[in-house]
Every structure is written in structure tokens, then in C-alpha cells.
Length: 84
Image 1 (cartoon, helix red, strand yellow):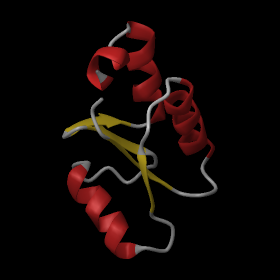
Image 2: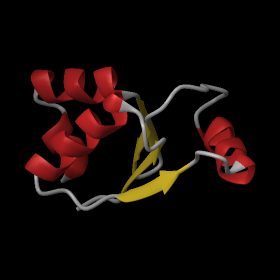
Image 3: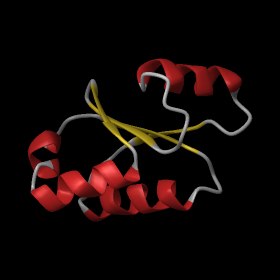
Image 4: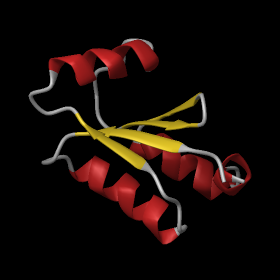
């Protein structure tokens, strides 16, 4: 299975929803909490092309986007293919 990385903030309901979808699919992921961590936030900004919202989700080296993007991929049936 492809590696998944998700940048989050602890209080973010969209982060929670994205993590729940991944968990329901049995996907292990690396969560990088960026609250109060300027270095991790800068890392996220660099990887996400300057996007500042959370979550920012990566499957392998591909930037998927945020929670809505992740759920859209799932509705289209493309998420499982990316995760394989």
C-alpha cells in the first residue's frame, strides 16, 4: 500500500473527517500535527504549493489536497486505486 501523509491541526473537524475515512479504509497514515510548529507548517506549505488550510493530504508523492478532495476521490472510485 502507498504511504499516506496528512498534515493536521488538533482542533480541525475536516482533519478528523479525513482521518476517519482513511481509518475506515484500513489505511495507515503518518499524521503531522502543525499547531504551533512553524517548521512543520513551512514543510506543508512547500509540499502543498502554498496551500495554508488543513488537512493537506499526500498519497505517495501526489498532493491530493484537503478533506473535500479526498472524499471526492473516494466518491469517484479513484481513492482505492491511488492507495493500492
